[in-house]
Length: 373
Image (cartoon, rainbow, N blue to C red; front, side):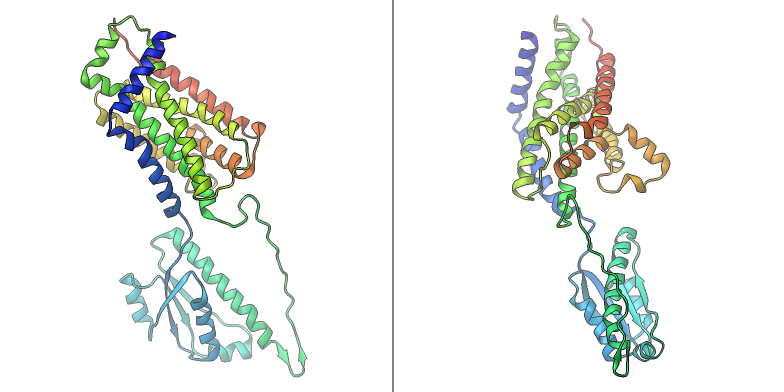
């Protein structure tokens, strides 16, 4: 036990002696948490909106005014022709073009229906889908207002039947996207820092030649690995603590569940990440190699974790692969515990899979580490 403590003491001294490492461990992750949580959002704002008004009536102007009053659209100009509107969209000057046909108001009064043309720049398919929803909602709201005005017969008013829905939003009542993203970004930072540091640590010992000196000592392989990885386990738990404080103070993210439960799961999850980092370091000779390999797997894990896109929307083969993704389980647990207040039994499936993952990865890492006397 004393041997392990001496190794741990040596590792902490090396970490805090390296002044360039401290900002990477503590300052940069916290800046990334603040910046990414504000920048990563699927909400689309400041949509550049143009329109072609071929009718020039009070009804067409009222429709355009609906878009002008919206906080999502920035109404730029009235295009005199479709050709000019297409040219503006080609240059990126406009995102959405509304084409109001001639006799729009007259046909609404006579036939009670008409069609509108909407052209949307769909290079970014996700943004285009959101923009289409915004446009549809505004037109539907405008249509409901017209029904009250147009459906009147002599002195007898006919009010269309309307069904009102009363939504009830659970777990995120204000629909604040930061509430959804902050737990995921926190998972990302804890994963990246602990993976990169553990992956490059032993490789650094190889590069400077101290690993060979340690290998000829009577230190057992298990003692060496525990002493090497424990400091980064502590750093990972510390990053989680600081991240939770920032999430509460800056973003006011609700924390409905048990903090000890979050720490329990995180303590096991970090073992998975450390095992992966050690496994990578055993097969690399330079820190650059270790960093690139770790980054390769991290990108795949992040993209298939459900952090940014729902797993249910992925192809079936991709959904099967996500079952082997440890980040997926961490993201699920953080959101379940923080936002839903889930208990131990609720996260037990993820906890057992992560524990199995930790045993396998650390077993492979220890097995692949070669110590020569």
